[in-house]
Length: 223
Image (cartoon, rainbow, N blue to C red; front, top):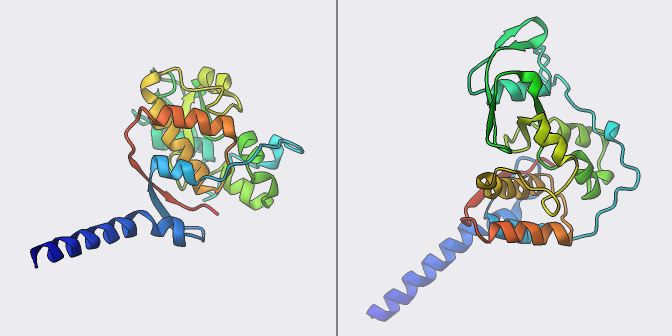
C-alpha cells in the first residue's frame, strides 16, 4: 500500500513538473502569451537556421519613435528608466545631469551623450534571423521594444560600437561577470520575437551558459 502511495505521489510530482515547464512551449502562440523555461531549454527550443542579410538596411527598422506621445523618444525612455541617479528633464525631453551604469564594461557615466541605447540583439542580426519577413510595423515594434527591459539597454558608446551588429560568436561584453546575464537575455529576446539562431551562435551561447546557473527565463511573446 505504501509503495503504491509513493509511486502515485512520484507520478503526481512528475506531472506537475511537466506542467510547470512545458505548457509555454506547447501552447504559447500569440503576442502576449508567456513562456517560462530554464534558459538552456529555451536556447535548445530556438530554431536553427543559416543567416541571410540579403536586403538589409537599418532604415527598415524605424526607431527612436515617441510611441506614447509624451515628448520622449524611445532612447530617452530607456535613459530615464535605467538611470542610477535621475536626470533633470526639460522641454523636448532634454536630459541633464543624472548617472548611468554600463554593464557591458562595468563603468559609470554622468552624461547621457556618453551612452548609446543598444539593441541587445542588433537590428541586422534580427533581420538575418527572421525579421526580413516581418511587416514594417513589426520591425518598428522590435526596434522600439519597451515591453521587455532586456531588449534595449543603455551602455557606453564605446562598447556599443565595438559590438556593432555582432552576435555572441564574435563579441561578448568585456565585463566577464556580465556574460551569463548577456547570454540569457540574448536567448530571451530571440524567444520573445521568435527569431532563429545559427550554429556558431548556438555553440557560443551553449559555451557561455554551460558555466552559468540554468535559471528560468520568463518571456512575453512580442509577435
